[in-house]
Length: 260
Image (cartoon, rainbow, N blue to C red; front, side):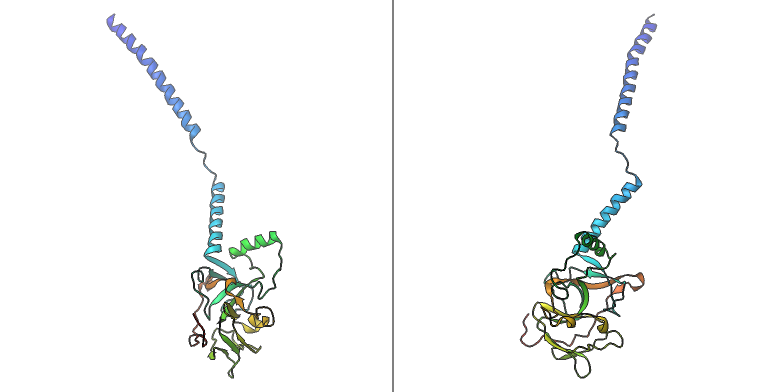
């Protein structure tokens, strides 16, 4: 009888524990399942990732390196229509200035394009976003040209050999389009300080500083309008390469009396 009583007591005392344990396990399991986060769908993850990449590229384009679609033949043979050049926006940010021979992208407002030319705000915003990624043609106020003269330089065309002269030194421009003359328009200009004299490599197809001689600024581009230096051809893949350097201006020195 004593043994039977002991078994009965043991069974009675263990039953609540088992029941309680099961209930606890069940409630914990419910809590865990309710608190576990929902998994994002593949499409949602892809959308978030794509948005983050777009924001990163826009920031990179705005502050560091911007792709620029070449829309015309004015810089042949250096740049062809449809090329995407990578414009280094940091090249002139820390005290450096454009040098003779650099290929630069600049805003021509006030020099090549009159002030006050308006564009639809919606289309302007869309175009700016696409052009910042190299997917659309740049604004009508953006240009790409080669620096031929910097502040204080005297640029003359042409000498007896049909070459440009910069500060009295003839310049052999090996980058010119085959068969092109240095210029069919004669000029003799001293570049104002803080500005640039720029020309295209395909001179017969380029509207550049020569075409704006009689306008405010005399065809020169203010330094603060320079967006950056074109350093690389990034697309198409077959033309991926750095822009070739030129030694055309190596013998040119600063004009007498120039400072800096």
